[in-house]
Length: 166
Image (cartoon, rainbow, N blue to C red; front, side, top):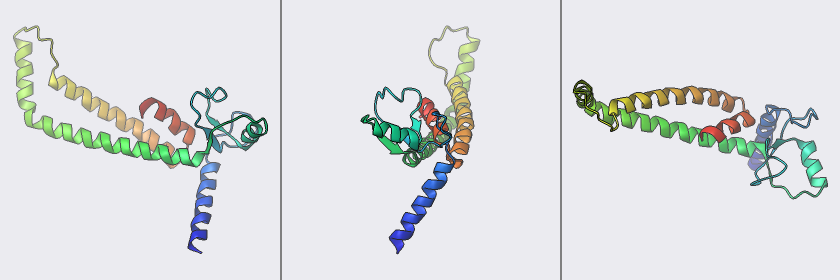
């Protein structure tokens, strides 16, 4: 009985995910259900997502194809993004904590370099930290958008961000 309830819950969850996907590019009016994970696929060079009709067409034509259900990709993408967000946050806090211990010395040395008209060519730690703060801010902004797509189960949108950032 418990395993039947789990299976029913899984089916309901998968159907809800399915209902939230984009329409297939084939213009059938169906939502995408599958994605192609075949490396260097000649059919899915621009869009790896497709519907039941496209899946049937590929199967009937005898095209060997590697397909998976879209809910599996969604789970993988969500997990990757959550790990990336956790790693970025942890790294940001560790770096800020360590920089704070030497911040006044770094600022003094950089002021000294600037005031002595030295042609110092090395890295300036304070500038690097400013860039790191900017990166953290931009990452949080991007992650807020990604988190919205995760909450909406928008697999294609998550996938497009994943190709760029993850």
